[in-house]
Length: 378
Image 1 (cartoon, rainbow, N blue to C red):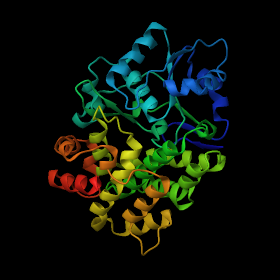
Image 2 (cartoon, rainbow, N blue to C red; image 1 turned 90 degrees about the horizontal axis):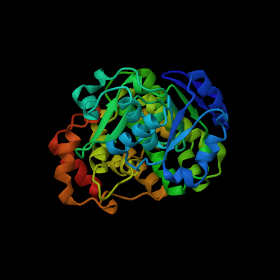
Image 3 (cartoon, helix red, strand yellow; image 1 turned 60 degrees about the vertical axis):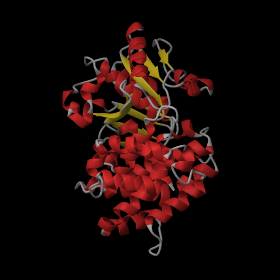
Image 4 (cartoon, rainbow, N blue to C red; image 1 turned 120 degrees about the vertical axis):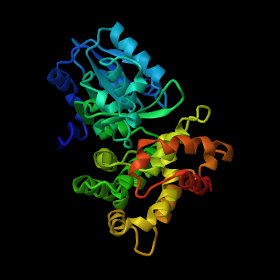
């Protein structure tokens, strides 16, 4: 079993959820709130998790997590937590459930409004200890189980980042078996979310050799060893599922050194209500354009990325990602996802103030984002 203790205690292995009862005891949690979504209730994963919790532990379940977590949903979870006298949170699901859980853990211990803790305005400095949380991921993409941040759509319509070391889950139980039933397209999209985290972290100009090394290892597992394709082609491949879960967690460990313009673009597009676009898919589609934009400043990082990913010297990184997206059955461009030219100016406004813009491989201004969106539109 791989036990990683860089930022929290992270157990990555088949059967890791069998440790849930002992983990609750370890953290002194006697009345947990499971924050999840209705899909995981319907397929029985919530029942699977409940069966790993001792019968003498009272459990409440909040299953209202939307695909893109919202401030109103966070407040609903807070109310359920309070009404049931809960004392800890089990974040069960993909990045949405984990981000919602982090938002709830924050508001349970800090006064409203949520926007006060926005990372872009220095709000992270106001975040102290929060309600204890155990993360149980059911996808391999966001790495939210080991990250300090959460992305939440606030009541004023913005998609903001909330980030603090205090928001990291105390323990992460990463059981690849929980991902075995994930549909191919969602498997592909979450996998490319991890790949984007890994690539943007390596490209970031922030100096952090350890994080960069973790990023390259994750890319070797996800792309170089072909596991992103293996899990999409055969969802029952348990070893490939484990490798992608490791790569996803490594993505979040790596982006300690920052992300970049891909995420700024995705966050801006993900806030469009009537489209409700999947974050991982947006990342996959925007990544080639950003690779082209960044290429002239990558230097030797380009070679290291290619080596880790198994990309031939004669092939560009952007064309390699376009080929991988096509192989995985993901959209070719933002236009296929419903984004129109009329939406671009507003997205540029939001992308410019996104904290991830600051750590892109090279500076991006309004003209830069205009060119990036034009490229990504196809």
